[in-house]
Amino acid sequence: MGGLTPRQFAVLMTVAEEEGLTQTDLVDRTGIDRSTLADIVARLLSRGLIQRRRAKNDGRAYAIKLSAQGAKTLREAQPAAAAVDMRLLANLPPAKRQDFLESLAIIVESSGK
Image (cartoon, rainbow, N blue to C red; front, side, top):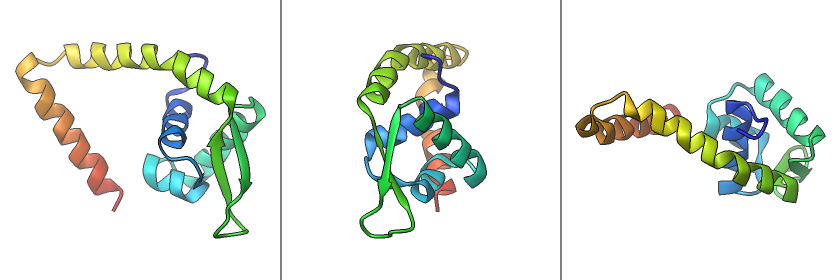
């Protein structure tokens, strides 16, 4: 996935979907614990894949956005991520795939509350 770990990919995807999230927002949306997320953000910053600035509504927090290099890396990683998804789903009978995806969506939704 373009030299990204699955968690780094998840963070980049989340930031791409909603620019300006704080690290706390990213913890809530990804389910990654705070200390691990801080390490991921530091690594993504050092690779130039994200940018950080003070959040407008909270001067103590940082808002995260993709850099141009981050957007490019994410675009390059998406086909490999989609292939992994397809390989995983291929293990299920076709009639069960949609049910599985809907069940996962319910789990993700409920864990964010």
